[in-house]
Length: 120
Image 1 (cartoon, rainbow, N blue to C red):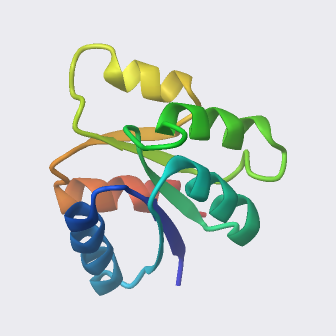
Image 2: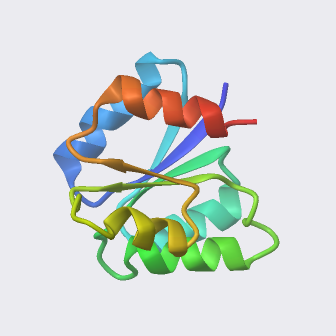
């Protein structure tokens, strides 16, 4: 069973997505801000990180940059989750180190496809 770290500050979004992912057979851990997400990824080494880009303390772009800059965490796939779907947002997420990008509200089948493509 793959472990996914969901880094999301919005409680309803976090609860809904974590429940849906658990029903799909994933183990889901959560973090509520960027700093906690960074620390949990370093300590727990999840199989994949779902990273909201608009987070308190450290935004998702900075979290992704730091994860990909460290040899300990650079191999962990990161999918950016954001309500920002403007021109350039996808590119900005990928440039910060995210391996893929998805928009909110989450369309579960699309997100699951991206998750499965990135998991070892």
